Image 1 (tube, helix red, strand yellow):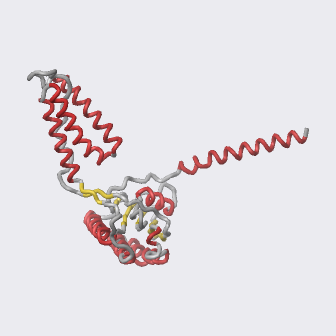
Image 2 (spheres, one colour):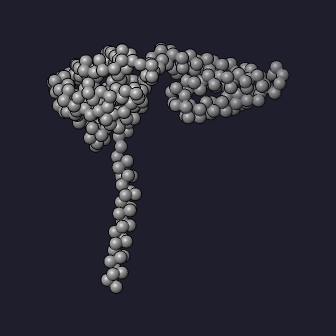
Image 3 (cartoon, one colour):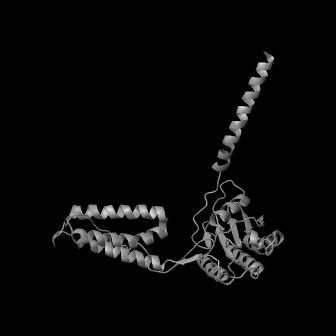
Length: 299
C-alpha cells in the first residue's frame, strides 16, 4: 500500500515536471520587447534628438558604411517595457541583423531616456576593435557627461564619432557585401506609372481594359511590396484589382467601342498623391548578428 502511494506521488511529480518544461518557453516568450521595423540608421522614437542632428548622423553613418562596410544604428526608445537594456539591445540587434553576414560588423547604440539607460551592443566581428572596456570608456567619457547636462544631441554625436573612430580600420567593402541602402525613387516611379495606368484603364472597354488594369496593378505592386512587404503588398494589389472591377461595373465606365465592355474595372486615383516625390533612402541590415559584447551605463 505504501509502495503504491509512493509510485503515485512520483507520477504526479513527474507530470508536474513535464508541464513545467512545456510551459516554461511560453512564459519566456510572453515578455519580449516590441522590436520596431528598421527604417533608417537613426531612429529617434523617444524624441530626444533634433531633426538636424538626426539628418547629420544619418548622412555620416551612410558614408561610413560605404567606406568601411560597418553598420551602425542608433535607436532611442521611450520605454524598455520592464526588460533590461541588455536583453532589449540583443533582441533589436538580431532582429535588424546589423552588420554584413560574412563579417558580423554591426554596432547598436540604444538609449532609453525614461529609464536613463544606454548600451553599446557590438557584433562578433568587431569585438576586437571595440572591446567591452572601450565601449565602457565611450559611455563614461562621451555619452554620460553630455546626457547629464541635458545635451542629448552632443552626447549622441560624440558617442557615434568615437565608435566610428574605434572600428574604422577593421573592415573594407568586399564583393559579397549586401547593398543595404535602397533608393525609393524607382518604387515611387513604378507606383506613379501603375496608378496612372490603372486610372486610364477605367475608360478602356472590354478585354483591353482588363489587360491595362492588370499592367497598372503589377506596377503598383512593386511599390506596395516595398512599403508593406511581399505578402501584404500582394493582398492589397488583389483587393485593388477587384475594387477596380466593382467601380467600373457600378459606374458603367468603359462601355462602348465593342467587345464585352462594362466587364470590370473601376478606378483608383493616379496613385501618386499620397506618396512623396522625393527620392529618400530606406535601409536594412546586412545579415549579421550580435555576440561581440559591449557595455551598458546610466546617467
